[in-house]
Length: 82
Image (cartoon, rainbow, N blue to C red; front, side, top):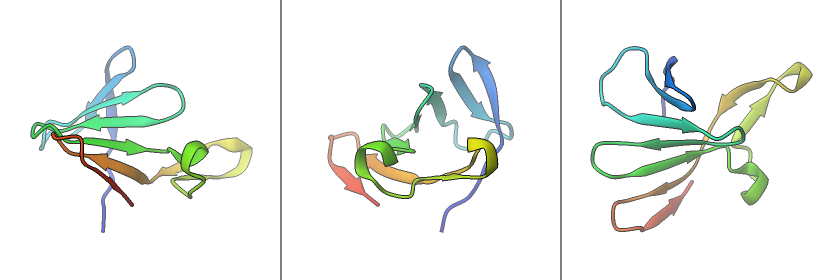
């Protein structure tokens, strides 16, 4: 499962979905994406440098083609790794 969304810049390193639906806030720190939903869950994309997984799919010239979910942390801090 999963889906894709086009993101638009809100300010600085903060983004939101172009078509707003679930009001998730996305932060890009230059290496990974972190998403925060209204329920308090935190989603991490692109942690492959830490977890040695395939959460970042690159194409030619090092451009990222796809960011995959690496980890989810709920409001209680319980972690689920893909």
